[in-house]
Amino acid sequence: MSEQKNFEDWLKAAPKSELHLHLDGTLEARRLLSLAEKTHVPLSYQTLEEVEVAYQFENLQSFLDLYYLGASVLRDEEDFYHLMMDYLQRCRENNIVHTEIMIEPQTYLPNGIEFPVFMAGFKRAIADARSQWGQSALLILSFLRHMPEADALHVLDLAEAYRDDFVAIGLASGERDNPPQKFTELYRRAGERGYRLTAHAGEEGPPAYIRAALDDLQVERIDHGVRCVEDEPLVEELRERQIPLTVCPLSNVRLHVFSEMKQHNILQLLQRGLKVTVNSDDPAYFGGYLNDNFIALYRELNLNREQALQLLQNGFEASFLPAEAKQNYLEQLRNFAEGP
Ligand SMILES: Nc1ncnc2[nH]cnc12
Ligand SMILES: [Zn+2]
Image (tube, rainbow, N blue to C red; front, side, top):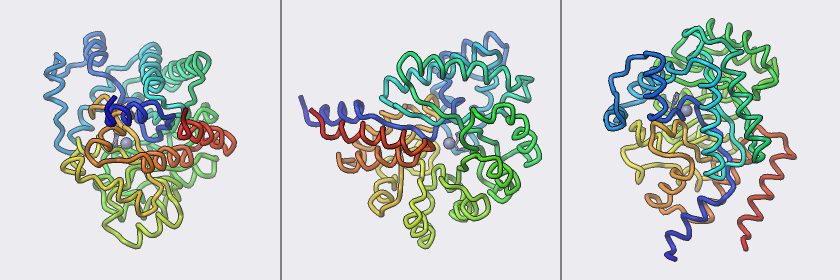
């Protein structure tokens, strides 16, 4: 067997965590098209070939426009069950033993779909995957930053009935002109209610947004964060405090944060001692699940075994799991690394 195939098989078989995953970003084109027909949501693309053309994004906003339109085909509990179950099956195939999934109620509520409908589907799928193959999954209540803070505060209150189902809150959607400071009160209240705190920052937005997420929102993890390199003292602070960055390589290339994978800075960040992790973000839109992201790093950036192990270890350490569960997964990873 070639060395390349050997290493790619090793990457695929390694136990992994995924910490940056929007569930709506796992809606595969095939299911999207059939649900759109059922719910009569008009799309400008009708075939898989047309979808491929439509998914040539220019930037974050051009992706988000299709992403929110795509999610609007989801209507009943069964739709939400299948969406979650399909992704959890992908976890099994990718050896993602633990995942932290962003749920975005502000996408569903305007269509009249309330918490009991989508939460019933999500929770049933997670319970089934847990009982069938021991899948570990936590949910993150993710807010849309292009909407007013007052709307987010209302949704935070609606989520109180499901408080035990969410480990953290997050902040996603268009970064430009929606700085973290817009959500200071949301993060203050969520912190008071015991949620762990993460937010997208420094994907398209400037490093000042990463700083604001740390200082004004008090987050303990940053989603993306790759633009931190434009601010040297910030890089130093992220390194010193070991703030995890949930980096999404294929997403960053598809949304032109980097012109090509060879330009991606993830291994430089790793080498500088930052706690970076690998994630897929919206795999149905960006051409690959978590294993595809690791393989792209190997093929384009010559990721080696030592770097891969560090990224995998970071993924478990940066999770919102309790300490004991983290230690169990880290031991599983060590056993895998020692190998047969
Ligand atoms: N990459 C991304 N950035 C911001 N918001 C998102 N929502 C889904 N994917 C996103
Ligand atoms: Zn994201």
